[in-house]
Length: 518
Image (cartoon, rainbow, N blue to C red; front, side, top):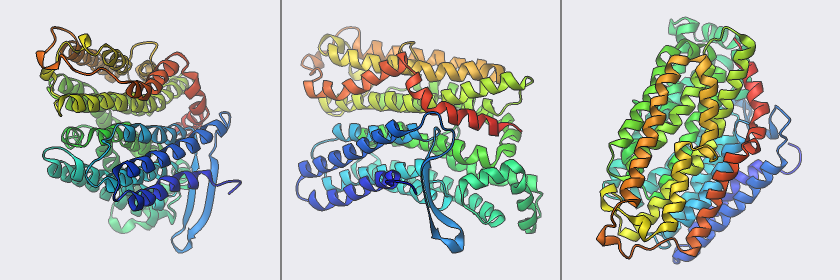
């Protein structure tokens, strides 16, 4: 470890904040809220320093911290960031204070509510920085626990059923992931994710599976495929990939809206990150062998979720399916990057474009999706909890500022050029089409339907005659404008100057593409 252990400090800051908030906020909701916001802003400042100090030229790991932890199990405390993770660390630091600011001032048991938010942030930071599977999995599971209790204790109607469904789905996925990686450990004697990727690339992982797990009676290829399936299921549930998605609509609709902001803005990214950090590097060949199944799942996730969003009457459910639709583009890009190419030089360029698009899409979708759910929180606050599309109408007449700001976020989500949502989708489709032309062409139906359901929502909520029930519907206050201005500025800045984030990821993407070569 060289210099100040900034990643450890960053990860422990919200954990310490959770303990402080739990202690000092037991009898005062405003104290609990102020403590949580303060510690989340402190974490944000550290993440901002991390980004500013990040070397945009280097291809390897940065801010590395490594210590022997459990030598008998070959477990090291190993954390670092690179271009695959730096944006997600910053996104997690950005969204938590945003969501906390939109949380109710005095929820029931505020010390628990705000403390669990900070504990969730610790899980996110750890997941995006840990590079030894042993403690990476601890953080992976740690994020599940506070999310479950936030939904179960502070959610809406049927919150217990939704929380249970969320827990069961994600827990089953985690079990298959853990069992598969334990088998990999038995074959290699290491949990080091970087070392495992090197073993897979050299072919030694397959040989070790055959040699040390021969008692299974399976060939190395069959065993590798089985382990791949277990790991994939763990990540597919978290994203989610259809048909492992049925927990998502109820969970997103039932959770407190500020919690849903984190579920869609940050936690869903954990699954895609797992594909990038674990699944593709450690199981490249089983993944290539499964593309005939995986690619249709990506297309299904894009297209079917867009049609499902169009059919929704509830604003939160509409945005829930929209989130699936946008993450489906990331799946399309990742799977296309593994497709064989006749021209290796051109293929490498397209793979670099598509993987850059995936990383940019993860960050930009986190911003726009969380912002849209933030506006839903305002709708619920102003209307006594109503959020059905049919409950509103003509709101632009009485709340033009709200309509304008939300309209910008909607058009960013649609992918309007000049806003941040366009950049990632453009790069994904630009790179994916030469590599997988048929699936990519079918997936464009999802883009069309995204525009249809979002424009339909704008028409029904903001246009047309004003619903008499909302003649006194409040427009955005100055404090609310101040809260949404940063997110709106980010949408414009990253739409007009995408190089600000592309420069962060490009070296890591080029190195990743190099390692993708069979």
